[in-house]
Length: 406
View (spheres, one colour):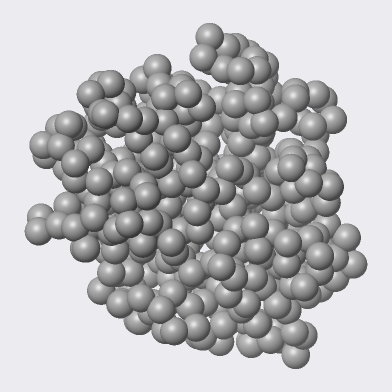
């Protein structure tokens, strides 16, 4: 049995790792999976970079930021597996939400209208709203920036973004230190249950197949331990399949609710797993079937085009200077080659390419695969733009008028 320690944060999207350990998928691959709970994304990052763990459940943009040396010394990171797609929610205080469409289901169904309503609400508010984000280099923050920017809101001027661990968001709402936050589940559902917030936007409605958490390794460790990496990825793929089976969702919620993982009630974890989110205290659930995905549509496959989309947003918001070296380094974080090596003989449908035009699918599309069949779901951005990973500069030119760096 090969021991592997993985740092994680208490979030519903740690489900694949938890299932891999608790349901024996890792053990059957000869991996003794030790899950180390951390308190913040900065702690997860440091545990990985300084070798206290061999792998980490980490924000996809943070994996790129560490590799590019943003706000720290660069440390090459390899992400050969996506742990989930989608999963974020923007929750605002009932006071702020009162200035939006009164129907919460209508708000999440029409992110274009809600973005414009949000911009108007800022103008009516007595001060800049304070919005919690889980890390500067998070998909949450990038998605929030993208959404606000569409409506003409400058996220660096018109709102205050405050970094907090996701587990402290609800407490900060209670203390009136935040007017809202964007985070992974179950924290939005907990804020709604306590009457502290209403969910006004879902990540999956801003980008229908938005990249979220990845399994990350230090590149040198990944290169030195190929057999262990492959066995772990096979275990995670099997665990992801188990997590996506509707019949397993209640058991999964109970596993995640344990003190060593999320330490929160299973009934507040379950809504995101079954795709029936409660958006406002006292209301019935809204149907949100794609709010969090673990396995279907080749969820685990790390599309290099998605790493490049993240890179484009880091440029857009002035977090990194554009350069050919940076672009190559960013694309290389997502190791689709390792995914193919580990799972190529497992029967898992394998995309034939590693890049695709993001945001171009308006309906399910069957694509060519080496074996079996694979249908990708719609992946539109809410504003209808598409991202061609072969022409990052042209994509960014669209946003130049509102971007610090174009």
